Image 1 (cartoon, helix red, strand yellow):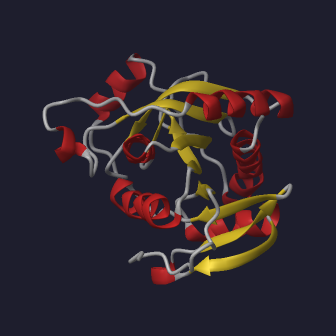
Image 2: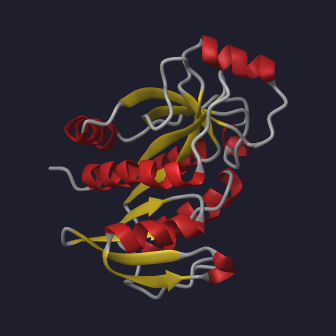
Image 3: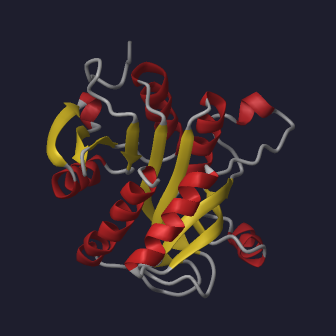
Length: 235
């Protein structure tokens, strides 16, 4: 029995794309899935199921931040049998050669804290992507002519950052981008032995005053969704 997802048995596909924004879940379902149907709207967190090239797919919002994602990822896996979870979302670039609209494929996700932090106590667990998904996503980006970077990212537990010193160290150590969910997604996936990947579109830049407009975000995010879907069903 799921507390936060009101879907019936069989309504959630084994492959789930997870944008943070529930309205982005609706947009992606309406634009990329065949015959999408609403399967969850508990607390306004929208989830849709349909097919993509004949494959069953669910696109379900995760909310903002790791605690919210932890709820939905856990219930999708534990209560509905999801086996592949791909985060699709925006990120802020932390390297000078990572540009707006570029795709970042998160190999690893560093964080100061997450809901799983208490499990590991003094251990610094290293959450990592599923390599098969990562490789397939990189190939899909190349085939589409989309500029993609694979490497480490930073999952922050706050949006309004007050640690410029930390940002400088992350940049110095090659971290590609910052967002708010991936480290916990990868940790939960490892715990439950399922596949996970984050495919992220650069929407703004921490090193220079650049950001996509709302219209530019929507058109750029289409590549991210296609790459995620291609990766999920490659080979």
